Length: 80
Image 1 (cartoon, one colour):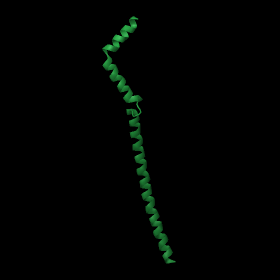
Image 2 (tube, rainbow, N blue to C red):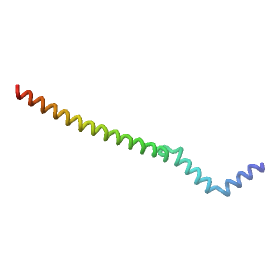
Image 3 (tube, rainbow, N blue to C red):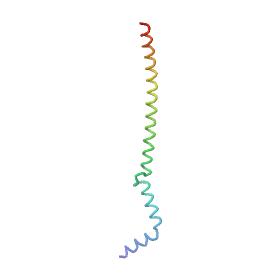
Image 4 (cartoon, rainbow, N blue to C red):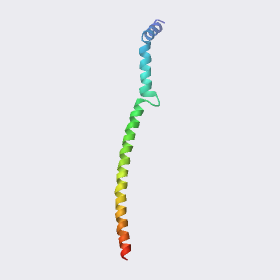
């Protein structure tokens, strides 16, 4: 019984600290929108933006090549 009283006194003396620590743990680790998940999402977004830029550059290069081929093709077709 003495241990329960001492634990209760500890909780009563440090109730604000315990509340703040519990809140911080929930916000950082347990919540659906936790800080850890947000950091992961930000990392994923930056990787996807880099990938989009890579595909955009590939698209532009391929479009230029296709236009050149089409010009050559129409030039050859006109010559015939």
